[in-house]
Image 1 (tube, rainbow, N blue to C red):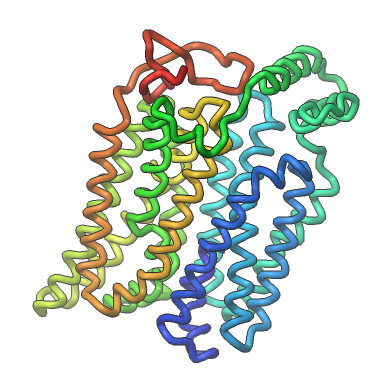
Image 2: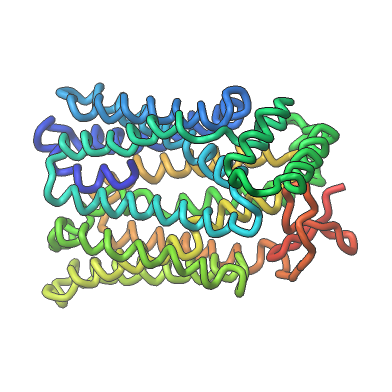
Length: 439
């Protein structure tokens, strides 16, 4: 979904005779749909269950891809993109939740990283296939993963934790036994899940007005600020319209797309090696600094082009700058933001505060996706990349000074699914962030 608009841009614009405004609307509708999906995802997953919600996301995706594939006008193209966005917004919530709830504690991190790896791989495959396939055929190919998952939904067990939450004890134990194997003793894990479920029932969740109390101000600011800034720095604009960025710099859009597809995959493995060793904040700072350098290099290339300098070199500078940007984003700003959001919010505000942070991120993502093409046309690419680089610099500063002091907390999981939080000396401390205690 994310990787579709860049390789398909020239074909769609030529075949349907779209203006810059019309294609910008098409590209940005994915984020509007994502915001809609994010708003309803938690309620839907709790009401229908994780497995059935996955099936709903697949239906939205299949209908969306079909609408794009057969489009003859802009409105059906936009409808398809909006449906894909809703599917993406639902998927972004329910898949990590389902994965976390079905995997053993000692394998949870590996599965989360593998999930991120599959996302980046999907984007890379879309870039590669877009070089050889037409935009309609690429949309048809996009149906295949959703169709496979829709069939697979009927073959996988429901989340044991969700079944325990709604009081289906027999089905909960049967699902857990199926996941762990018929010869595995699940007594201890089943007891832990029941204890966790009972703990949730004792916690009274806050409403939207209570969320804005002073005691929640710091963690709310950190979460919403990180999500918003990570989207405002231009990631979706650069990835959605990468082909046009390369072509505006005088470089082949096809070759640039292939290079972009290849460079993103190894970047996913950097957090695997470094996250637990150096911490979340260090990865965010390194990632933001790398993104800033990539933007600076690409912006400098446009400066040379404006003054007629290094004409044979400036296109390659744009390519290298964008590739550095694409590599450094998964290193810290990709999955790490979601992990921080999961760790810093207390249980009684986690759902509401998490939704608010996610919604802020989707809205900022829409702003970037919609205005990026206009910005490239109305001003020099130099200005676009320098603005993005400036924001990346501020993110690095924000992560360095705005999120408290890093501390280590080696306490074990408490059984209420808050693996890193503990009250210590009047402060609420995560393994990699510390902030005022929420009482």
